Amino acid sequence: MSITGYELQEVVGNATGNFDYFPQEVNYIYKKVSTPDNNLVPIWRAYNLNDGDHLYTTSIDEYSWIVGLKWQAEGIAFQSVLSSYTGAVPVYRLYNPNSGEHFYTISESEYSSVAQKGWKKENIGFYMVPKDEGQPIYRVFNPNATGPGSHLFTESKDEANWLINQGWSNEGVAFYAPK
Image (cartoon, rainbow, N blue to C red; front, side, top):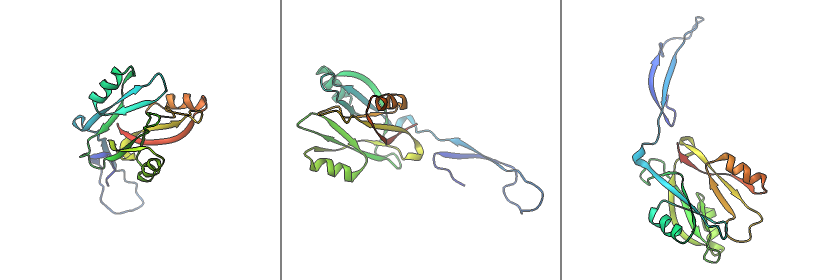
């Protein structure tokens, strides 16, 4: 038997045999397979104090440049994986030239729909892992925002819940980061 994200280490007991009235005990021992470090790519997060927007990027150059423009450096928000990672899930990035805001989605239809509203498609921003291999990255929406800063992506359930308690809308899990 295979379980995604786990590797069978050992079978203790007789896994083959006939069913009868005497109980048999068989233990299957699995080990969690973690994402190898050489597949991990940090996602840097910067915050614009003027308008509330967050930028998420795998490019240390882009991150350093935006921090040089007086955005607040928030460091590594979470990890992503290389495009060559088996089962890599693309996260599309869009840019609103009117507000300066960025938006991220794994949905191709949402990507196209948002672009039809005037947002510029910036292709794939980064790659995440399938649901069964990752930890959730939550997406919350500020319904009171009239410009940038309307979405936040975070691996912290506490941060998401705090914003939800402040009136933000819970949009659930946006994608999954490697464990």
